[in-house]
Image (cartoon, rainbow, N blue to C red; front, side, top):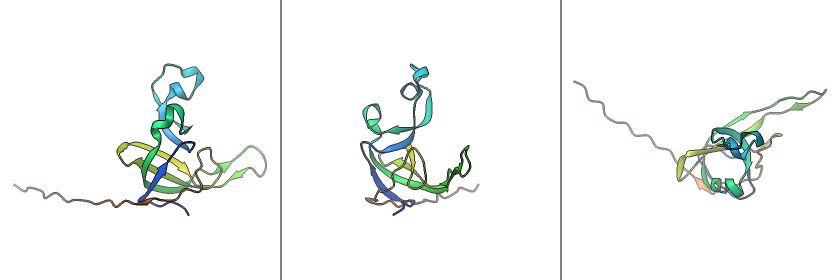
Length: 125
């Protein structure tokens, strides 16, 4: 089952995701750099803080391409974007289909979130 916008999911240890993390933890030649980069990480060790409950905010079909050899065609995948339920500033993404580093193909939703809008009355002078 492919996730949809509004699904509530739990990301746990050993899930591989894309997240904005300090370069220090991703690249050997960037030790001491706390500048953020969007990279594939596994939720464990220094990235264990990324485990938790998330809300799917958007899904797309993208990311495909071609390789260098004949017939190296990589199809688009179901791309899932999420925000952490208790901290919306923490966002992650991953794929459910295709051929990508951050893949979680069999993740079932735990519930549904509903977004509401409120119209604030304008003052006219």
